[in-house]
Image (tube, rainbow, N blue to C red; front, side, top):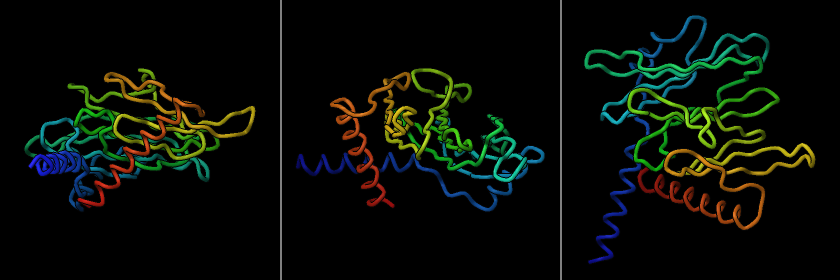
Amino acid sequence: MILKNRFFISCLLLLGFCLLASAEVSEEDATVVEQFVPESCKVDKIEKADLDGDSKSELAFTYIGEEKIIGIIEKIGLIILKWNGVKYMKQWEWEYESDILSEIKWLKVQDVTNDGKPEILLFWHEYAIHWPLAVFTWGGKTYKLLGANGAEEGFYSEVDMPDVAPGIVHVYRCSPLRGLTYPKTYKWDGSKFVLYGIRNGRTFVSMRAEFLKKTMQMKSLIGIFG
């Protein structure tokens, strides 16, 4: 009986995690998004999910500016649209400009702070420099950026894709002296992401094991409910 109850509770927890996932974006949603794209920009990626905890799905989409030279774009941006009962209205916007912007790699909706609410993850490439990762969350009145050690800036992964799991952001950095790459991992402490492990050693080994465990749990969840 106890085992059955544990299994039932586990299923409910997994199902709850699945409900945080993005909803399917329809052609009608894509048409709505086009109405809010800034001039001289084009839609890049779209996600649909309840981002502010009101049980109604918002539309989050990224856009890119014009290409200045081959492989370099003018700017990128993120806009969130909220349903007011009649139509979608712009709820929030973030824009970023740089002379070395290359492309947006992905836009994801995922709970990375273990609070049961999804965050918005935006990952892009700045040519020949680094790969920034921005994590945005609903703060009650507006969206805010969750950065490393409480700073209002993103994480930087210089050579590879970042890894994310509940409570963990894992990025890669370069060593200019040895020409090697090494991982840096930040853990959510309840209010901010703090540096938890770097390079190797017992701290990093235990951290990496924890990250892999959570990643495998997520993959198993996808296998069960996907």
